[in-house]
Length: 139
Image (cartoon, rainbow, N blue to C red; front, top):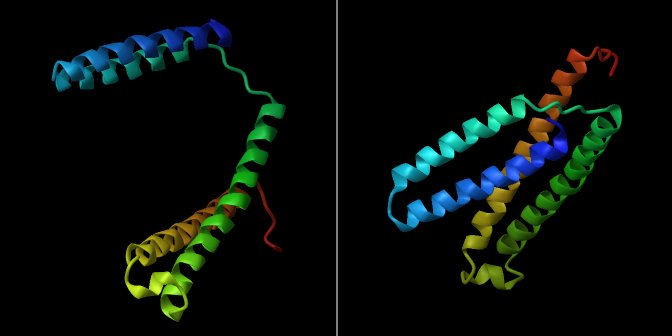
């Protein structure tokens, strides 16, 4: 089975499973929905195992560049967002400090922790992959 045929079969399976799930939810049969999801995932895994999917160097390079660009955009965005949501509350300079928008500081804290987690995850994965693929120790 080639990739085009696999995509067609996958769409057909997902449409059929979606219809069964919608009907079972309407009928308040949540067990049928859960079983349908499990069997559908199992069937999709079996169909995918029979498909010859090849990934060339171009595809790998595109994925690497997309991941780098995503990190380069997302990490500073949530860091700046966290700073903007945390800074005005402490200085008393904005409407956020009047107590009307108290959840904004909590949102800023969540974004700050997410930014730190993302940076730590990147550093750990970079260190691991650098050692795995023979990076030098001079860095």
